[in-house]
Amino acid sequence: MPYAPLYTPAYKPNGKEIAVIETNKGTIRVRLHGFDAPIHVGNFVELAKKGFYDGLKFHRYVPNFVIQGGDPMGNGRGGPGYSIKGEWKTNPNNRHKDGTLAMARSSMPDSAGSQFYLCLGPQPFLDRDYTVFGDTIEGLDVVHSLRQGDIMKKISIENAD
Image 1 (cartoon, rainbow, N blue to C red):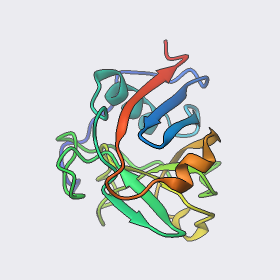
Image 2 (cartoon, rainbow, N blue to C red):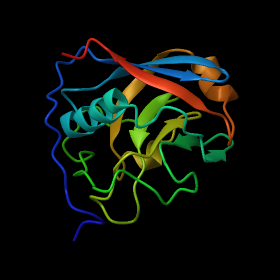
Image 3 (cartoon, one colour):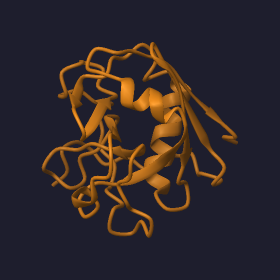
Image 4 (cartoon, one colour):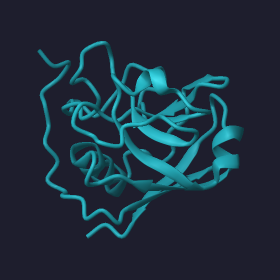
């Protein structure tokens, strides 16, 4: 049974989406994998377009592992009030590399919602359990400079129909 009601995004990815994550440390550009993880990308695009992430803090930092954000409560326990279906088993490019964008979840497989993380180095052991839905194409230095408490000023999406 999922953590919260399962949600299917109305937004259908076109494969060209770029997430622009403006932080207090600089800007990160992430190419989203709309064809590999359409539910995750559709959900992320919808949340970003609504301004859900704007002003939130990164609430978790583990050196050489991940920087995590997307929790409106700021403590790792919040979300959008729903969950989305995991796609790591169906994603042909589900590889956690340096700068990879993936969705966090609880121990329940279909419990992801709004919390995401950026990898701080390769994390291949996560490939079998967490959905990758983007890769950093600019600002990897910014990704590596982020710490707990840093702010997502705004997330916008380029090329979203």
